[in-house]
Length: 192
Image (cartoon, rainbow, N blue to C red; front, top):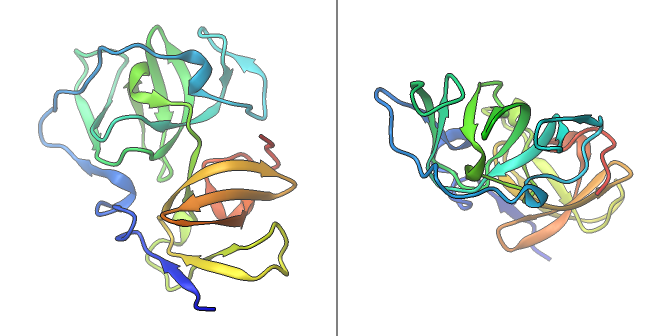
């Protein structure tokens, strides 16, 4: 059976981790409502925020264009523009309808709550980006299971479940298991 290689190009990751610097602020869709129950699932700590949801927590970007602002409001300048729907971010603070988030590269800023989704996604080993290595996706949740795909660092996957150090993910048409330590977008030992 042929081994697949999942590349970031094949998964519409034409921009490194889905963001580019902005010279001027761009208009975002900041007027739809948030469905709080969809914004998150379980997080390791139970620090509750103003919304009643745990902090910190992982979510994903709902829109294909999301402004990252330097403060919690439309009057604050835009520091980044994310151009990849589904990119995972970590909510680390809340103020009214704004969420302070951190991305896989450590950039922080404020995003309007309705631009975030509770769908869990992850990035394959962003700390290895630019290196000639891959993340193995396996048929089953064991290190001895057959490798079904090799993912380049930076590939965004949909996370279906995580338990006992393994996450079931989907990248393009391929579904399999990756070690929880090889992706960014889930907490160590998080189960859902």
